[in-house]
Image (cartoon, rainbow, N blue to C red; front, side, top):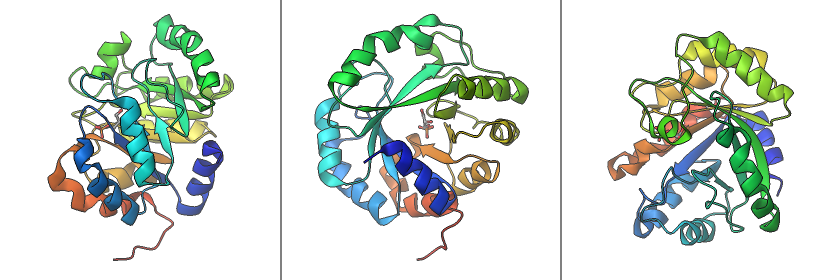
Length: 252
Ligand code: 1GP
């Protein structure tokens, strides 16, 4: 399956796509079966798999388990170049375009490109834009780059447009996992109004209402991770999914 086409078709059909981020360090594999079943029942569109660090998680084993449990696409969201596996369906080939750190603009890409080819993974080139969201986030710290100030939507819009002109297929507006504040709606609007490639929004989204606000502002893919690391929230997956899929009538 071509994952980029799958995402475009899903966006076209449902209004927006909903991806759940699974971090092997944060989600116990013994609980994965129950969670994945819930996401399938809730009409989730796929999974991002990865994390800034891989302290305890067995990355390869985790993806294998996800693929055994679900036919939905598993897309690697790499925190480092060792997070490349042929068991996944695609990889977000992220360039931290909000920063000026050459390692995250091209350096890591040179190292990982041969691996991606060897493993026959579909690379989804993505302009990754870090947005100020309260306290410094792991993504900012690990990438050694400054986020775009949250009251500067025009910088985000120009950066996103530059990504598109450089040939990237997606733009990711990232507040950071567990962010205090989400990417401002005004910024999502500014970016979506200039870009013709799909805009992903993630970081700190903790309610279906917030997810829907981002979609209404022009986001085409919504990502949540942190919120569902708490098992008590699992019953809410369908509400998030319904909020994102604005073209799909809600069923109970
Ligand atoms: C992080 O955008 C993702 O990279 C998801 O963020 O974990 O805060 O939902 P949360």
